[in-house]
Image (cartoon, rainbow, N blue to C red; front, side, top):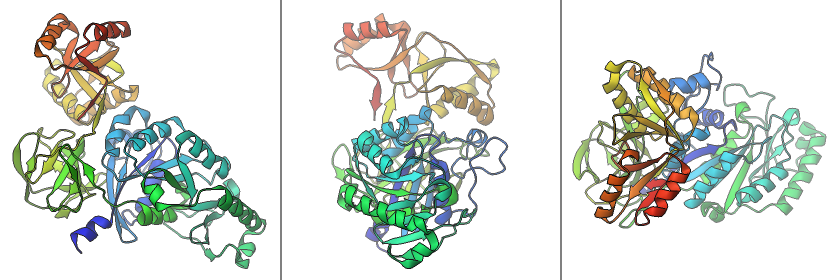
Length: 525
């Protein structure tokens, strides 16, 4: 198979949703249909015997939530799917935002009873910044929910994107019988419960087929009336509008019962874009170029508890990776030989011989690789747009055993590389201040410090309400600022200067008095 064919067969996408919309369950079923797993793990509480494949971290398995991005690769309909399952919990938004920079499209999951929710709106805004194509799956049709036409209208009004249904549900709740495919004019019926295996129900060709009346009774007439209404009231599907991010094809189903999952996978294979050109600082990089390029969008510590390793996730943008090839680490200006790159299926991994644009490589990181680093075959390129957000909550870290100070520092720095929390080291003392967007991040950090590094810590309140990165072109002004505000200054984990404001009023006053300095709430690299 040629390099161009390898590129064109790849579909790299993320799943986005509000918590509890069924995202992790849907991920399991996509893997099930793709043949990557044989048994779907239910997302349950702390005594569950099985856990979701994408939730490999001990805390995720205990709480039944996703708090870190995982990467899974599988095949379907001649396409190689690179699926990035992102955290559903709002406290872990940074991980999701960075992951969205590494994909070519996104799958949005919506709960049929709840409709468009807060986190879905925020993630949609991030996708819109890059005109990321969005495919929508309305989930949980096995339960009583809102009318499908009402859901489509809400998506259009709230998310400002036109809806084009590809499938239409036949009833809901106890009357849910399957889906009608508007493009193919076929009805797929389902058993009351499909079980753990990916079982397909009967397919009936044609909406006017008498067999449909025999199987559905009065629901057949209802379906025909609804489809007639939908064809007249909804936008017809236009692949170009979808790929431009202006239209979202919509499918209905129930992930937990396997309903509509095959149709969803078929739609991703047929319509989702293959790897696209990417903007770098110097030029646009096309995937079919011969020279390798890729960027780091995530670093994960301790995926393998036995080896305490750190893995850098690299999105391949152009060229072809081959085992043992030499890559140029642009930020450090060094050439490294990569002999042991990995591919993933959640916690399982394997060494990869070659990879193409769209694939996600795992590189072993010994402290030299950072988020947003670029690797090439010699060209000085930089792929930007990886965001770091100023935290909103702060705690002082207190070590229970003073002899474990070195392990605490190592653990906090490595965990902060992942982006869920940020570590600040005040210039005036040896404190360690942890910053986070949400409270759950503090719990996760304490849990992982104990579980993965053998360090027990507690938190104390600290007089900080906001953090801002300081930048200034005039070195003399910057030095004067550092001298006058020394007690409120710190360095983050990457060594950047940060102002830790004790109050909102103080922050406003400082910003007003130093107009030639930039106080940035977001650092993009």
